[in-house]
Image (cartoon, rainbow, N blue to C red; front, side, top):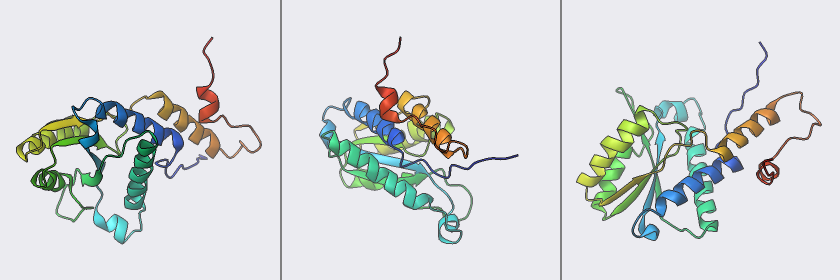
Length: 192
């Protein structure tokens, strides 16, 4: 069976804009949005995947956070941020810093408002609904963080889905000279 691989889409405009919009919406729910630490929590992978196998995941997550923060700055938000990795299992070392340890450290540093962003999760599931919403929230509150929020997973957010559709179309080998729809063109259409 023929297939095409889309190796990454973390840097696509639609993904970045969709994530930024969700973050912006949640920031505005805090009493002092400008004082909120944005806490990106990505799914971890064993360290050997990155160091020995050459997986670009860590670099891609770091670049993704940078792109989202640049978009937030364009929208007038210059919050501090950090990135950590969650969901480690087993005896091997995983990417660091670990989410749980980072939350404790942020509380010890005096961070009072924290917005958790599940950066590598596109749907709600046990790692967002239990691990982030229950376990990490409880840990944050125990660590002295007073205000906690969480950005929802992208799910079927229209800008994200449209951009994924574009990624699929763009990756098809037969597209060639066909005009490929783009995010701006579709957003300007008015439904009949």
